[in-house]
Image (tube, rainbow, N blue to C red):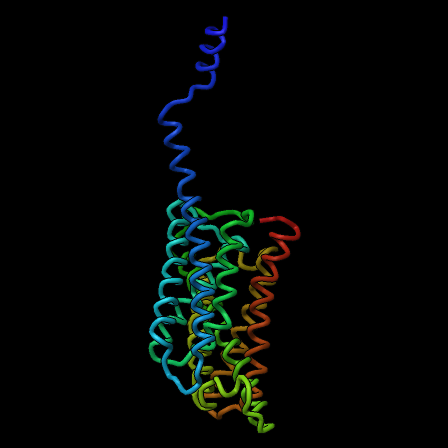
Length: 296
């Protein structure tokens, strides 16, 4: 009788080598991504810590070991994203897209380190990059993964990520510039001011980042108008309006600066406002829809 029960179980729930292999292949990428996420986070933190120990405002280049750690961290972060893509879908949930934006920021920072003294950005952003990688790897998924994206929509997504990443770096650079300006006006050159590049260099980097951010935001706005269906639909209208207002404000700031010049304090205020509008329109809506209302 026992043999009969075993035979019936085998017929109703067959366990084949192919099924076991399929389960193993499904589980292996998740285990690999989890291990890679932890490794990436540790490298990000290590790069930030090493840069903090060697920070010197008179140096125009990051130390070679910091640059090597930054390149390694960003490469591992990119590998995690590519493993996600192998699943055939693009996950743009709240946690995943946060990790993607930090990946974009990391790539821009690594490239910029070759020509600009952005060492302070490593200290400010890499710990958050580590956190974003870990959360996106281990937090439950939010939103609906996208499959079969058309090239136009994909261009809109890529340009939006680049715009948000560059403008986040712009706002961070602006915050450092604001602190530096206030300290110099009060003749206080101690603390963080001693570790920053010259004021002219800081201002130049700020407007260079702003120009790059406005360029990518322009591409995102145009591609969204051309390729995104129902742009003024119920879930997109606030994002569309706020992003357009942000683009108009940031573009105006850049054009006026080029034509007539702007006081640093005025330019910083306008950029912070423009970035805030964009952040609320993008992350605010995803936060409410996916994490609070749990509607992807």
